[in-house]
Length: 232
Image (cartoon, rainbow, N blue to C red; front, side, top):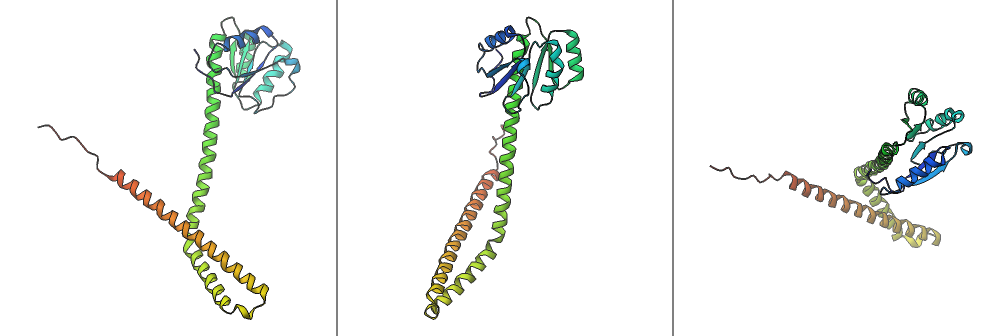
């Protein structure tokens, strides 16, 4: 057993030997979690679009096309496993393309290929999870920075809102002296200032709740651990 490959992973199998592709797919079907597999002959291979698959496997390739295929798969940022028939090709590929996993193609190579392919897929999945975690952490950091700025600025905002509310209420006391359109605008200013004031009050309430939770958690952490009494 090689262990289950990552769910929703996809493999592109490049080669000109239909028997190898058939044997590989037949063998992989006996393992848990068969990935999606696309078989591509070298005469149909014009480009490789990165992001459409997680792993490339190069099988038996016609000799005149091997150099171009190796160059093409080496240009991407995805794991590549190459199984080459000739020892000289293996030596040339290992020295010219150190990023690739190069193996000698023989009858029992599937026993080594499947565990390596599964491990490659797991690493691709792990890298994607790390990337997403970093993006989430970055977004959280930005949100925390914005929250700290709002927390530091809330007194100034409250003072400004108080000034706007106070002046709007004073003007509304003499509302009859203003045109109807001006009175409507004053009422809108007053209503929006009240709404902003409610938002700031809620923000202060949430900040207080967070501090209370943090203090409670810190208090639990700071409690001395209970130790067993020593036996005399």
